[in-house]
Amino acid sequence: MSFERWGAPVALGDRRVLHPGMLRWLRALGWMVLVGFLSVLSFGLPFSALDHFLPDSGPIEVASNAVCAVIALGVYTGLVWFGEARAPSELALKAALPGLFWGLLIGVLMFASVMGIMAASGLYDIVWSGPAPAWKAIGGSIESGVLEELLLRAVILRLVWRAFGPWVAFAASAVLFGAGHLANPNATPFAAICIAVEAGIMLGAFYALTGRLWVSIGVHAAWNFTQGYLFGAAVSGTDFGPSIAHSTAQPGFAEYLTGGAFGPEASLPGLFVGTLVGVVVLGMAWKAGRFSKVA
Image 1 (cartoon, rainbow, N blue to C red):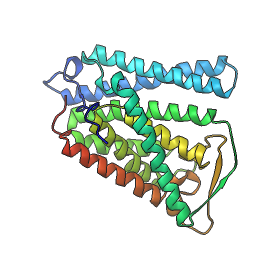
Image 2: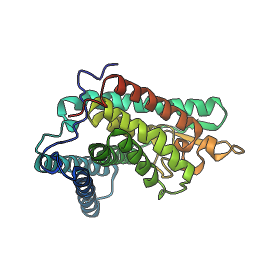
Image 3: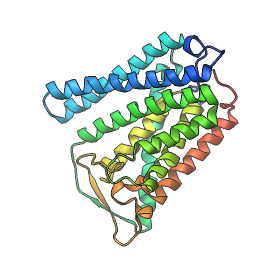
Image 4: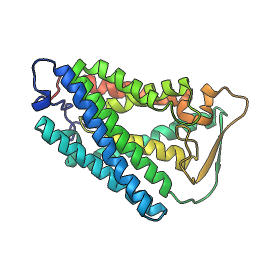
């Protein structure tokens, strides 16, 4: 698998708000707060309006999530054009289809591997429950994949990288990603640590390797969809709606082995798979010179 054909170094931005000179680190952090706030708002406000005025149905929920995702990406694009005087190469359309394809495939395989380990170890019981509507799971996957990756990777990781370098950026974005899940139902400190390490670092690594957001979006969305719809497990403590299978943790095992009510991503198998992929992709990014060649 080669990402070189449609990947590039991360474009950190070096004009207008981010021009070299005095207090660029502070300007980068202030810009990060503004862009992050407006990007989230540009998704949340239209979604609330559509949810209020449109009838409650699965296809409409998916369409609403897709429309709001496009709006959020568009607002981010406009902010980058205005504030950084550049086209956001992290959202390059030419890389979208291959990036999403590989991201979706990798996300499915990763979580299927987690559940394979769980089942083989006797930690989980997985029962096929038959066909089920996937609308809620698709809508939730779009929202989490696009909005969280836009905020955590394109905004926070990129602009902290601009301010303080890649390793501070990886640590900060991963910690914030994990901490952001502490408000979820059934969250624990161990669950937040798992999210930070297995997902925060891994998703950032794909962004660093490709310089694009698409693989990270695909992996994130597919991981959640596979977890909630294909296996019917809790997704970060939340219910993703109807599913084609139902997965339950076997009684008698510690929560750190199964993830408990938060879901398998708060388990040692989830931590192992996500961290392994993250380390491999970070190594690929390092080998490709992504941490020394930034635009």
